[in-house]
Image (tube, rainbow, N blue to C red; front, top):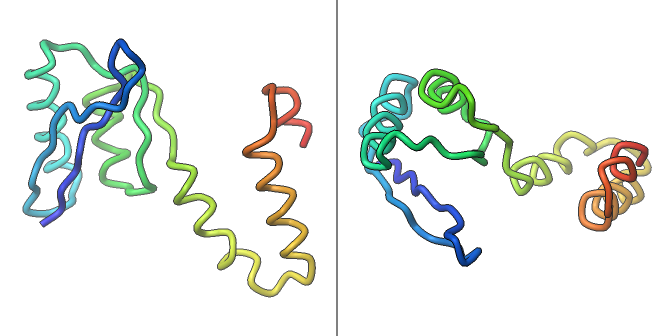
Length: 115
């Protein structure tokens, strides 16, 4: 059974488990139900931002239940796909190194965008 945790940051900037669920399946309706239930328990206070993997059903549900929440993909999932996307590129080592430096060492949005 899929087990989605709701993890956030409390007022002390500490990671906190806000809740979790057990799902029978991973379709949009199931996520909508889960998110609406969670929102009810949070007294209608939607999260400012959500970071998820690239699950289409979850993306659709976020758009329905949390239309004003910033939605981003998890960096780990993005970087995990790089070897598969660049498998035949002759300079893949240099590309991975450049991307790693760009992602982890950029200090400003401008620096990241220019990189």
